[in-house]
Image 1 (cartoon, rainbow, N blue to C red):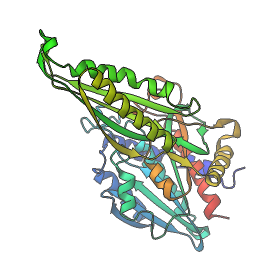
Image 2 (cartoon, rainbow, N blue to C red; image 1 turned 30 degrees about the vertical axis):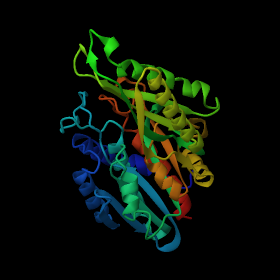
Image 3 (cartoon, rainbow, N blue to C red; image 1 turned 60 degrees about the vertical axis):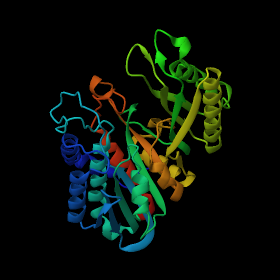
Length: 392
């Protein structure tokens, strides 16, 4: 059931949402470089009467909208950064920044966040509680969530609940995905260095070839998921980089592998890393080489708490219809997981593909785009969910 007619209000904002989104798409900025984007956000929110703090976590913006009566504080979080990708699209709002592109929908997220601020600024006198808007920098693997948290984004006041959303091209326009528990995986990176003995390619018997050893390590690692993890556990082990040598007729002294582990469960994650180290060390040794490994944890898994998830699901069903709200999990990662470790909340997905060639591309693709009508749905759902906390 819809408590307020936010779908109509969001629809009325459509042209403004598109204008903001396309302007940001033309001027994308990488993580911790979102100065123009943050400036637009801060100026808009200040104009709406919110209490604005800029420069949070370097380039983040936090704004508080306090209601007339006391009540809970709800954090609404939106990411702002673009990606180091050269856009290959032909639309008129193509990126003007060579080698940088909004290939994940964060331009739409910022536009939706500003739209939500407009909606609730008109309702400030009717609010019992506060909305805390967080426009976060550097979500794409650079630690933006940790940076804003270290700079006090979750304090003064501390939120009681946190909500966030993502435009999602695997889901059709007019649908949304809401799931309790893990919604996105934890992600970490590992680097394996295999040391051998270099030599001439014409005399391999006088060398100890790290490329052969590293190649067998790659193959061996593929058995971890199939033979060491519970079939009911979701785990990914992927090698994305293999570098060795500089020319065709020289056996190098070392080979380097870089990869990622994704999972929903911390214990499973640790077990996988133990097996990676064991396999890399022993396989390399079988070829007369020595393997060492370094690991870097990037983001925590995104875990949705029961009560906020129920609120978001009810809001989404009211806006789009119960038949259009399904559960969804992905092995992609998002640093909203760090915030949800501190504040109970819900992260949900808003369908943005209309089946046309221009909206079917995966996130981070150089031709990524989305149906802008999805922003109306995202604004309406999040407004409805937030209102259930701060409005009667």
